[in-house]
Every structure is written in C-alpha cells, then in structure tokens.
Length: 216
Image (cartoon, rainbow, N blue to C red; front, side, top):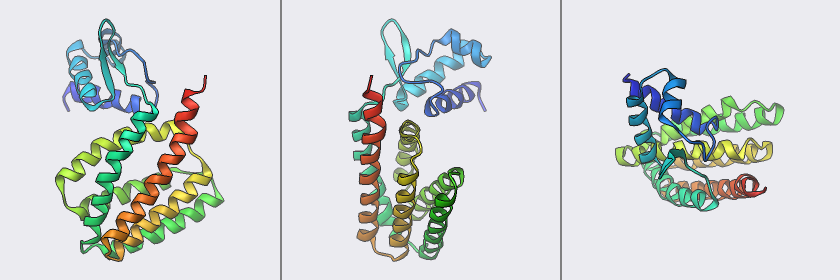
C-alpha cells in the first residue's frame, strides 16, 4: 500500500470514528508528524478526503473536517433512499432468495440477543453482511460503488447518534423484514421495507443525534 493510501485510510477512520471531530484543522505538518510520513502523502490524502466530502478546504486554514448538519443528514438520506431501494428491488429479482431467508432468521436471533445483552459488534457485522449480500445480488457495479462511498458518511452519522437499545431492536426487525421481502422475490415489497427502515433511521438520527449536536 502506498504511503498516501495508508494516510488516507488512517485519517478517514479517525474522522468516521470521531477521533477527529468536525471543525478539526488537518494541518499537513501536524499530521505528517503524527503519522510518521512526509508532507506529500498527507497532501495527497487530504485531497482525497476533500473529494469524499469528509473534509473541506478553507482559505487560510487549509483542510478541516467537514461539519454534520441536519441538512447534510437529510441530503444523505435522499441519496440513500434512491440507491438502497433500487438495490433491494434488483436483489429481489435475483436467485439468492434462500440466502436472504436464512439471513432474516439470523436478524431475528440477533434481536433476541440484543434484548438479553448490550453487545452490538455482532449486530453491526450482520448489518454489513446484509449490505454486502444486497450489493452482490443486485449485481450493479455503479450502484454498489456509490453505496460504498455513501456508507462511509453514514458510519460517521451513526457514531454521532450513538447506540440506543430500543432503536437497535426496532432496526433488527426492520432488517429482518428487508431480508424476508427480498427472499420472497417481490421487488416493490423489498423497496417498501427498505423505505420504512430508512424513514425510521432518519427520524431517530434527527431526534437523538443532530438535535443534540445543535444544543449548546
């Protein structure tokens, strides 16, 4: 891996996981010292972060970590709705129905585990597995590529919202419904189940995350 790629991955991870919070100045000298590389790979990595929308260039300050606002989150979900609903439709037309039926049962089991304990790592891994399965079943490289970029921003927003036990239980049920709908081979039902999940997710984030961030 090139030095600039390593720097990019490190900075992107720090931004997504809020070790570098919105408004943080990403000074080339400071980051090169922190990461033990020269300024050139840092400069290249910062240009990529700006292109991704995770950082912005400000005159006199250089690159800074981009802010998250209610408008930013709403715009993300407009794009997310378009991409994920279409992916669900395509997946429902695929021959992977049996795999999604099994995954739906695993989400039901995950819901039971979430009721019994607060561990979330396994649940989020299951969500990632559903995303990957839908990408594979949809079999559209443009859709999956756009979703990969979008998910980086969604991970960042999810960190802001933090884990809410009630919402995680609801989300597990919604993911199970999406998997079952895809397994049934009904594209519009799959899109509708996805729409319900995205609506509930947006409502939760706007209420518990963005509103909190605005509170002084």
